[in-house]
Amino acid sequence: EPEVTQTPSHQVTQMGQEVILRCVPISNHLYFYWYRQILGQKVEFLVSFYNNEISEKSEIFDDQFSVERPDGSNFTLKIRSTKLEDSAMYFCASSARDSYGYTFGSGTRLTVV
Amino acid sequence: SQQGEEDPQALSIQEGENATMNCSYKTSINNLQWYRQNSGRGLVHLILIRSNEREKHSGRLRVTLDTSKKSSSLLITASRAADTASYFCATDAQLKGEKLTFGTGTRLTIIP
Image (cartoon, helix red, strand yellow):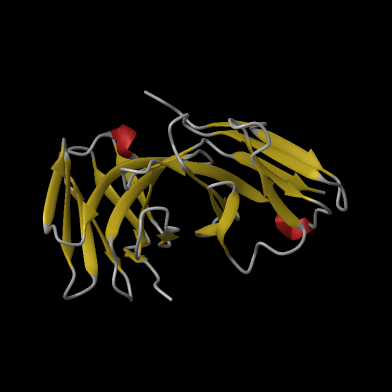
């Protein structure tokens, strides 16, 4: 069964450093998303991406965040200058044109120290 | 904005019993989905029910949707230890490609 692949599974970074979280969505999917989950809290929407541009973003997705689909297969989330409160599990997801179902990756646990 | 709230927040039952979790939301939806999350792991899609459906089955899972009450329930029959996880409902409002709004989750523990 097709999967959404995320790397790395766990990343530790110092406050103020840039991080790039990587995702490989399912190949025939057209909609891509990033969500995050702070430990013990809800899963929160960050951004959706369609047709090579951001289609929607939340208040969380401020100027420190950016997304890119650099080569037609990878989908990345960049945090330019990490803060302690960015520590969370980050999930990538994708969905197809003709399906309402989403497929989530297994997540990247980001720890900012 | 719509918001999913599950209850109970935590549920412990004996293996073999049925587990029922509920979800309420605030605004009109296009569809509602249930996800499972094992501790510290990813989200696994369980089942999707559309706004014009009232009940759906998948294996040991049964989902109901009452749009007049803006609520849904997830029933897991004949529970197993492996069902121990957190269960979330998630809704989306409009078109395909719409973001999902997740509920707070129910932590289900199955006692062997």
